[in-house]
Image (tube, rainbow, N blue to C red; front, side, top):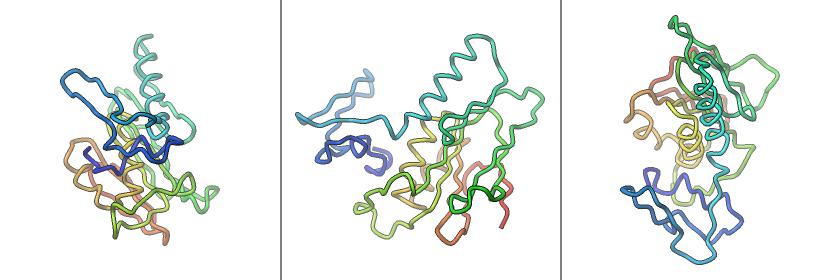
Length: 193
């Protein structure tokens, strides 16, 4: 509910009549269920991030403490350089994927997810005036969290800013259709203009 429905797991399902308000969630027990018969959920909006997090947990279980994981070229999880150096990861211009990166982000014990507007067309009817972005990249401690926030930002535009800046270690890089870059929150990035 933090995004007011901008991240809506029902939007990825084939059942278009369902909305995020059809989900009942009990925070105390961690249980969730659908209120309406026939409603469906899809985890596609967080799946790549979730897989990166699970793979990281598996590596940690095998005592790997330094790794860089990339899932489907969208979700990245970086962990443990140890000497405080970082993994350098580029954010590409979706209009020119073969060109040099627009931004280079130094990742240290963090996750990064990029969502492009070529992947899907979000329903922005609940967010009039939201800017249209070509690409949104979100940094967060967990990849599933970055994945959900990046999808929400594609709908909310810069209205996502309080959700990003209100939590430590979250940041965002938004690229509009003119190639203009907005960076806010905790983003150790060097963007080229």
